[in-house]
Length: 200
Ligand SMILES: [Fe+2]
Ligand SMILES: [Fe+2]
Figure (cartoon, rainbow, N blue to C red):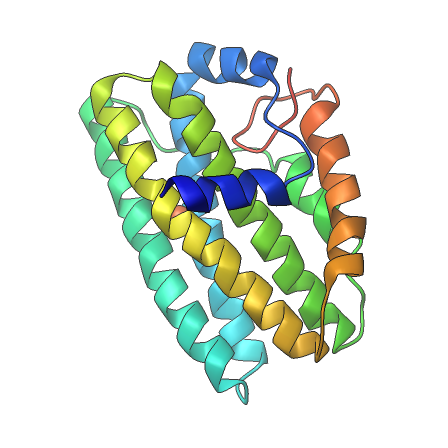
């Protein structure tokens, strides 16, 4: 597992700022609610790719498995929320995913390549944040977040493999473009705390 985390740290342009960790610890209920939304959204993104690219068998298989895992994570977060008396609710969308998706090209195959790269980055960041948070959380939540690392690291790799396939070659330059935006979104002050927000 440590290797997977090292790979993620090498891939991402920066670590989570310590101030965001403080925000998360001070807003654990909100963190759980947003985390539940993230898992549900991850499943939904995978499903929409399956609707759009029906002729891509590798994508269908990887995204189908990913969607199942994300929905399982969603159920696990809901169970933890229930135990803690945290009520699930709507939240205003975070700037993070929207900020990354703004740069996605409109036409295929560029569109697919970009959506997959964004998917890889979101999975990688989630993995990095679970690892960064775990040492500060109580036992039950720390175990859960440590357990999630492994699947999110695999999802990150699945997305990158599919992106290179869709591009028909290396996607490093495009990844670099998106990582530059990601660094900005992670490090610059944000207005609202979310699982993928900048420090508030
Ligand atoms: Fe997940
Ligand atoms: Fe994931």
